[in-house]
Amino acid sequence: MADLRIGIDVGGTNTDAVVLDADGRVLAKAKRPTTPEVTGGLRAALDAVLGQVGDRSDVTRVMLGTTHATNAILERRALGRVAVLRLGAPATTAVPPLSDWPDDLRKVVSAGEAIVPGGHYVDGREIGPLDLDAVRRFLDGVEADAVAVTGVFSPADDAHERRVAELVAAEYGLPVSVSHEIGSLGLLERENATVLNATLYGVAAHVTDALVTALAERGLSARPYLAQNDGTLMTLEQAARLPVSTIGSGPANSLRGAAYLSGVSDAIVVDVGGTSTDLGVLVGGFPRESAAATEIGGVLTNFRMPDILAIALGGGTVVRPGGLGPDSVGYRIATEALVFGGTTATMTDAAVAAGRVPPGAGDWRERLRGDDVLTGAVAIADELVADAVDRMTLGRSDRPLVAVGGGAFLLPAEIPGVSRVIRPEHAEVANAVGAAIALASGRVDTILPAGESRTQAIESAEEEARARAVAAGADPSTVEIVDLLEVPLSYLSEPAVRVHVKAAGPLAR
Image (cartoon, rainbow, N blue to C red; front, side):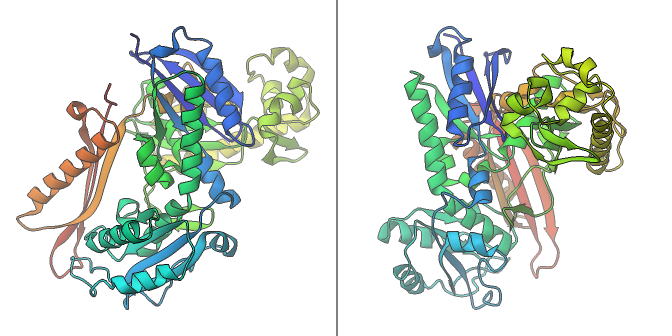
C-alpha cells in the first residue's frame, strides 16, 4: 500500500491542501477560498485533492495547520471562562493576574483570579507551603470552564502546579492548564499564555471534532495531526491539552515548506498571501525563533514563536490614488479584482500591469498598462518589501530569498539585501507542504545546577525531550536533539543554568 500524506493549511484568504507520496513528491494540490466558518474551506480543499488521487485508503496521515485559535482570541469569540490561579503569595501580590490584559478580553475570559500561598524561588526552594484549602475556597466561589495554574518559577520546580492540577481534576472535574508545560521563565507572560491556553479548550475541541468528522465522512482512516508554532506536529490529544501551541502554525508551515521545496536551509522566506505578507528566517531548515515576548490579541506571552514580520501587503490589497491598503478584498479577490472582472483595483491588478503576471491574467496586461495609480502602487509595494527584508536580514546580504505563497508573483525579480530570489515549484502551496512534511517534536525548558551534576541533568532533560517527541508521534528510532541552549544564571547564590532542549523526528509509520 502507498503511504500518502495530506497537508492542509487554513489561511486568512485561502485554504491550501497537498498530497505527498512516501518520497515527498507532490502528487496533488488545491487552493480554495477560506470560508467564514473556516471548516467549509477545509472540506472543499480536502475534496479537491482527494479527487486527484486513486485509492483513498492509501492516505495514512493528515496534517492540519489552522487559524482557529488565533482568530478566536483576536475576535473574542468561542472562548471559555477560566479560573485564574497563581501560586505565589505573598511574594507576587503587587501585580495581580491579568493586570495588563485588554478590558474586553479579560471580561470574556476571566471567571475570577486569586493568588494563594505556594510557588518556588529560582533555586527550587519553596516561597511558602502550598495552601490547598485556599485553592478549594477560590474554586468553590467561581463558575468556570477550565482552570489555569501558574506557580512562581515552576519551570525550575513544578511540584506545586502538579498537586493543584491533581486536586482540580479529582474534586472539580475541570480541565487544567499548567504553566510549566506552556511557557518559560517570566511569570506574567507565562501566566498569560497559560490562561490563553485554558480559554481555548472549547475551540480546540471544535477543530479536532471538525477534522475527525471530515475524515470520517470521506471514509479516511488516516491519523490526524495538528501543526504547532515551531513548525512541528502534535497529536489531537496533545492539541486538546495545549491548543495555544497551534498559534503561529501558519507562518511556521510556510517556512518549513519553503525550505523543503527550495532545498535551501538558510534563507529569508517571504510568504505573500491575499491579505498580508509574512517574512521569516530559516536557520538550519527551521524557523528562527523570536527572542522577544509575543503579543497575541493584546496579551504578552513568552512561549516560543517564529520570528515573523507581517506587513499589510497581499494580492487582495486595495489600491487607491497615492497609496495602498491596509484593507484587502481577501477571499473575494476572485470576483472583485479587475483582472477577474470586478471593480476594485488590487495589488494583483498592479502586478499584472507591471508584467508580473499570475496564471490566467496575461490578457489583462495591455489593458492595465500605463495606469499611473497601479504603477505607483507597485513602487510602494517594492519599497515596503525591501524595507521589511532589511529588517529581517540584520545586515547580512549573503542569504537567498525564497518567495512562496499564492501572491509571490507580486515580488520583483531582484530585491536589495539578498543574494538572489528563489521561486520553487509548488510555491503557492508551501504552507500546506510544510504541514505535510513536518516532524513531531518535544521540548524541555528548565533550570539545572551548574556544578558537577550539570552533565547528568542535561542528559536527563534530553531524554525527557525525546520522550515528549515520541508522545507527539515521532518514531523513537529517529528522534534527534535538534536544539540545545544553555544560559548561565549568574545572579543566583548557587550557580545554575537555564537549559532549553528540543528533540524532533519523523512520524512513526
